[in-house]
Structure formats: C-alpha cells, structure tokens
Image (cartoon, rainbow, N blue to C red):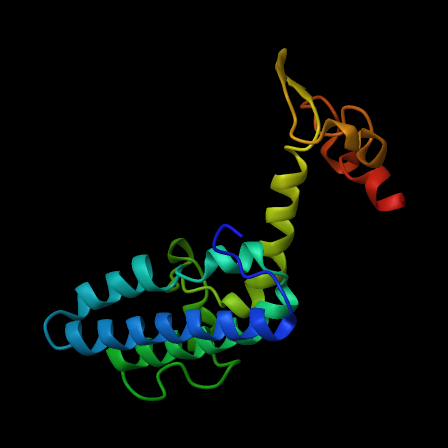
Amino acid sequence: IGGVPVGTPEYVDETLRVIVDDIVSYIDTTVSELQVVSRHACWSSLYYCCASRFDFWLRHVPWEQTIAHAARLDDALRAAIEALGYDGMLGGAFSVTALRAELPARMRGLGIRRRELLAPAAYAACFIESAERFLDTTAQGVQGRGFFPMLWPLFGVGAFDTPYPASQRFAQFLSG
C-alpha cells in the first residue's frame, strides 16, 4: 500500500530484503564508480543520495521488521566510508572515530546516522504526524478538517489544537 509492504511477516521481510539489496548495490556501485574519479563527489553522493534511501520504509513499516535490514544498510555505509578512507578507519563500534562519524557535521562529525538506531524514532514520528491529521483542528483560528474526526473519543476533543499543551496531546490515548 503506497509502496509499503503489508502482509505476512515473511512477505514483508522478503520485500525489505530486496529493497535493501538494491540500496546496497547502489552504494557499492557509487563507491566503485566515483572513488577513483573524485572522492569528494563520492562522499557527497553517499551523504545526500545513498544514506537516506531506506528512510521511507523506516517511517512506514514497524521498526521490529526494519531493524535487521537497517543494520545491513549501516554495514554497507560503513564499508563505503572506509573505502574512501582506509580499512579499519572507523574501528570498532565504540571507537572515537566511529562515534564521531555519527555526529552531525555541525559537531564536526560525518553526519551518517545509524538507521538501526533511528528505526523506532522514525516509526513513532510517522505515527504522530498521522495522528495529528485524524481529528478536526483549530490552529491559529483556522479550522482544519481531519481525516477521521470520529476518533475524538480516543484522543480527546482538541488534542492536536495549537493551544493544547504538547505534553498532553496523547494523554487520553495512552491512558486508554
């Protein structure tokens, strides 16, 4: 549905495996084609084009089903980064260089976030964004029509209105 595999766990797993195989192949091809020509172009391609290719599925498929595939993608990105540097550059999982590679560029890191760690937060964020569209809202005096206004008993009237305290948006939902 909308590019998201829905069905048995085996079907979802196989579909995600094929998607990740394609992304890993794309990463490998990018490195092999651009590594010799221009390491800077290769890094830009990895950072802007390759690293985020699995994010759509991280947001829309339950994280329990994406986490193993995200780990495979993380391994491929680590190998690509090391191909641009030197073997063992990122060291072990807890080496200073490996930890720094995950920091944002503004903190002098490489900005490559581990998708394995990002999966639960990405899925939760997608749910929150979707839930905010369920109910009718009044934001800054403008009435917005929700997709499922009949869910107000579940979330509470005005749960997603702007003046509503952000900490209480899901209070009624979670207490149920």
